[in-house]
Amino acid sequence: MSFSSLGLSEQLVRATSDQGYETPSPIQQQAIPAVLSGKDVMAAAQTGTGKTAGFTLPLLQRLAEKPRTGKGPRALILAPTRELAAQVHDSVNQYSKYVPTKAAVVFGGVKINPQMMKLRKGLDVLVATPGRLMDLYQQNAVRFDEVEILVLDEADRMLDMGFIRDIRKILAMLPPKRQNLLFSATFSGEIRKLAEGLLHNPVQVEVAARNTTAEKVKQSVYPVDQSQKTALLSKLVRDNAWEQVLVFTRTKHGANRLTQKLERDGITAAAIHGNKSQGARTRALSNFKAGEVRVLVATDIAARGLDIKQLPQVVNFELPNVPEDYVHRIGRTGRAGESGHALSLVSADEGKQLAGIEKLIKKQLPRTEIEGFEPQNNLPVKPKAKADPSKARGRKPQGANKGKSFGPKPAGRSGAGRGRGGAGGAGQAQGRGRPGQQRRSA
Ligand code: AMP
Image (tube, rainbow, N blue to C red; front, side):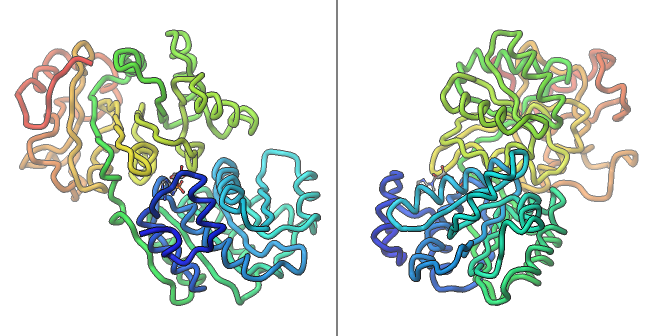
């Protein structure tokens, strides 16, 4: 299977060879012919599957088939975050090296005037975040009457971020006759509703089964008390000589705090999240890519769309509240044929999140205790056969009761569980040699 056998022109194939791609990824094998055929496409694909080239290459080919007559844009690509928009724009530029297509990107957080100037000059492909695109439209800086192809990239995340109203407004302004491509990591009810109103007889493209985690990613859970997480992370970075690790926290504050603590520990680190200026985010990312910063600490939203090649190690410093975010997070490692490791530091108060994740990915994650960091408080995971009514919520994650989880914590999950009050009992409960749970030193 080659890019040219999918129907791509010689110019576009040459651009993929320049990138070092030898064979199309599964999503590309399915999406490229579908987009070339002119049909609408609904694709379930996460970051890391090669989805960007999956829609960009055929889109460029369709645009190259006839030249632009007005100022454009002729293709509109909407993305949830500035980072993703910037990366998609980079990809468009790389793949359009040998075709005469002009592209631009617009997103919020930076001055609007230079973006207006770019639009005035005329272009074929516009990559945009929805909010800034609306601003530009309201200031008469962009028109949509030449749009032939619309792409919604990471549509699920756009909805999560509250862009649905902007998206609907934009859709209402586009010419009705156009090709629509919708890419989303997950297909929730809301996405399906959006898809129904948007897509006409779409070709459905799906690579990995929905909501399953990348198979190449080895996943583990290290149970540890909250208060010991930073120390454990420092130790892991040192002992394993990790040179490039992406660490997720739940909050922006958490990201800042962790970054400072790591720096104090002598480990170079930078935070990337929504409160940082665009410049600071770009700098953090490029320092990380250049190997000047060992640990990049990110929140879920900021991490979306970060294109970092071959990231061997992802750490969840805290589990996300939304289980799907776990899937996105670990999709950052084991990309494009590489294997990777996603490790979660899980404290007793995160049992609910862990259970939600294991239910979504339909498997139990192996737990490993690290010597010297054994938690005082067990994870309040599923009770065995008999449910504790205070915790049972009717449904249990599949496979969670196979004896691999931690024993139920005696004190329930009151807020006190975070402290050191667990006495010795909890620790002992873990030494029972449950299958799947080992102890090792890092
Ligand atoms: P994406 O899922 O679009 O974010 O792409 C993930 C990564 O895979 C990017 O770094 C791409 O440059 C890379 N990539 C895309 N297509 C291929 C391919 N056919 N072969 C190898 N790498 C690829």
